[in-house]
Length: 242
Length: 242
DNA sequence: GGTGCGATTATGTCTATACATATCGCCCTT
DNA sequence: AAGGGCGATATGTATAGACATAATCGCACC
Image 1: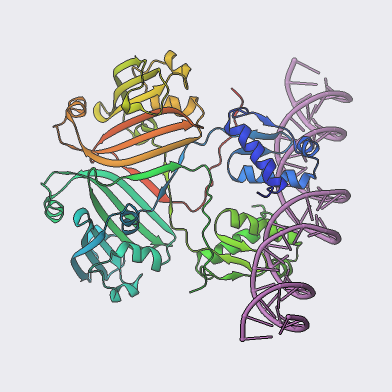
Image 2: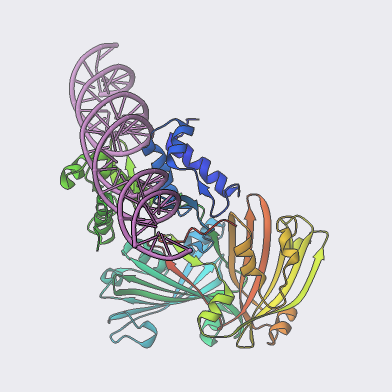
């Protein structure tokens, strides 16, 4: 057990007092000079701790006025981007993808608005332990992602490949519910009108649309989990170039 | 237009090169000494910029080895905590809450596990322009939130009040779909079996459970929108104590 | 009593320096 | 040739000091 650096200790001490409610929103934090005396260190060290707290949104700093505990932000949740293959495997089930359709459209249909033609249409179902779990209809811009033409998605899903092989800058998810239509119901082997969780995802690189996908999950078989973001502590490994 | 501080400019310059793809994941960033020369500043200034990038998860820093661009994290979405009243009002509809049930339980039922008794049970529906939109069943720990006993929720929803008046440290949402059961269907005025989006939220303060709520949204009438998180730029105002 | 301006305060930014620490790679020993 | 020790490198942490900037407080003046 190694002692953390001083600025981290100051940071943690203040964070603790805020989280515990001892310092309520609006409370004024002692000025840097006071903390400097309390911890017996230089002002830069205190400043580093307070700046980090400000970056994290826990406190707000105002010149001359001082540093104040922010109102609980309470507005951000963090949701993992669903990678179905990985998640299903992680919960101990066998994952499979079955491709139902693959064709190139030379004009962009309305469902894929925002993608420049030609576009690739992929339709398939995700299965867990052999049981259909979700249906997806996907459009991919072949101008934005030319490499996808060479990929074989008859058994592995295009979503994971895209997320890992094509750079993107923005994504938007719309999450809702819908009754299964005839096509989806048939593909999933359920009655028409069955409740489904729907996830619609758009991905862009700058202003250029990359892909648009609409997924239907059988109700009760899949959930999205979102947690309040206390800290972004993801420690990804650096990895080698390529 | 005022010039941003130097460390912010260095930060932005490097972020730009990473986001644009010029520096791919795994690329080694010039060492601090090189950036120091490039920008004609002290190492501490470069260090501040790089440390911030590391905190933000864009780069990883290793002693002796250098600083490297992280793999695209691509795993975080930001979801707004739904505040129904505000959202419905924002889209130009009239919002209303109708309380269906309110009672105090002196033993914690299974549905509210994690909350210490006594617990308050609240059931009601959210309406937009007079039409039922969502049903919610909520449990609140009266030991964790004693103040709620004095609140009148016959017309305004408990969710907003709780989020704004009780401090909490953690929240978890489970988002799925379900067919409406008899009770929910009757309350919403739809046929049993209608598709619904379900949102289940648990909130804690430390280890103490505060509230648990299960909401059913009529399919097609409500969506959650999640965007990729480019930056956590929320600038909340400090507010005065109280 | 209201108003404007200067003094004060607290944070923001930056420098130059120092020492600590982890690690890579080379050289020397065995 | 295998392995250990050691120096070079790059980051990590911290200090003391300096000047800049924003905002508030209080006093002087009208």
